[in-house]
Image (cartoon, rainbow, N blue to C red; front, side, top):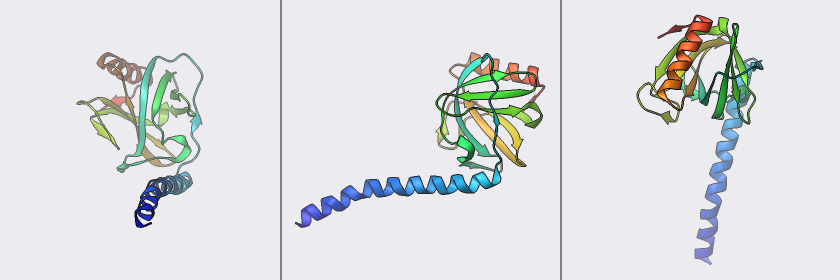
Length: 162
């Protein structure tokens, strides 16, 4: 009987940890949604490049992933660029646009929250929304597509590169 009781308790550990993680994310999402207003919906158009949406974090605290407004999950994305905004259309998630007036700069890095890659493998878009400075990290499948994204965004939107 003792062995079965130990096995039962051990089996309860996994769902308990999963429930704690789920409730923690929900609580964090609710708190962040009080700080961050709804995002501008992604514009329609022809994508100029495909990438991987990695994360959006607070610039002041880059180890805190933003879960509010659907920004938490990572996944495949397409970038759509026009003269007034950069849209990030994510597969299976709601896309969003970053107005050109809110984009402050672009940068490259090797790591963000729970993701490390090769040197300068991530493209960081530094922007402001709801008086919050944010950084959205994107990853590209090749160095060529990475450079194309930087060149296209800096040229078309007049954004500086750090």
